[in-house]
Length: 143
Image (tube, rainbow, N blue to C red; front, side, top):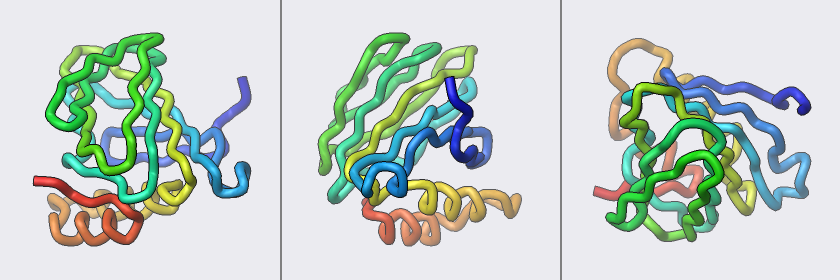
């Protein structure tokens, strides 16, 4: 298997990008998403113009899609259409690894880099700044 094109860390989370918009004529982004035990990722949100596919590689994640909890273990899949409110959690004692596909590629490494930089400062992030970054990349926080 080839090495990731880029690895981005956001707090405890790790995203290993395999393909981005430059590789796919802006049609999709593909990355491995590592979620350590007890992590909640991210605030419930929806994508304005991007569909998401989650495929379980290791461990078991709990994804909540439009209020319905879905367990995603190795080999399981979950399609999240644009507009569906969702978030992902790891309630287990082992790191979860998911394969994520976003299409089109408008939510890509630039978004995750920017969010990662905000979370590096040490203090809890300003929720309004997080919401602003998400909004600029087409992610809308849902309450």
